Amino acid sequence: MANSDPNNYSYSWFSGQIDDARIYNRALSSGEVKDLYISTNQRQTGDCLDSSGTYSPLTKRYKDVDGDGYSDGTMTQQCGQPAGYQLAANLTALTGDCNDTNDLLTPNTIRYLDADADGFSQ
Image (cartoon, rainbow, N blue to C red; front, top):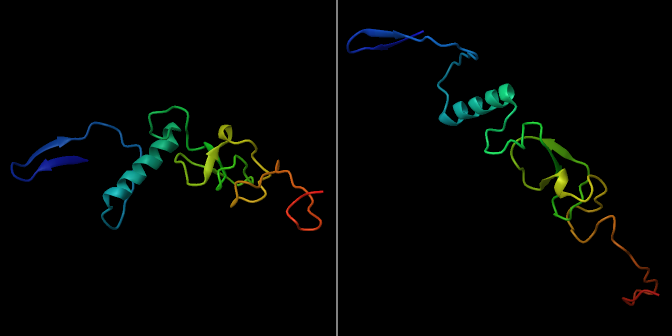
């Protein structure tokens, strides 16, 4: 592998090591190159390339769309924080969410019988 200057025909040889070689039948966009760099580096180092050593590509986040602190058990593992997902440490329970569209309904919601539908319990 060499780098040449077409104006003066001088060559300088690459003296490093290549750890990941790929051939494409088209030019990659800058976003594709960045995504490949990040995914390759995460796979090799186990880091999310952020300023924190806390998160890795295997960091578990649990679904809690309504933000009530209860998950229905749906989990994803990734570096980024997807919308509607939380770290386990930020949740009251990892399973048991009864309605993830209403933060007032949780497994701890107390319900009272209103047999005559007058808005008051017995």
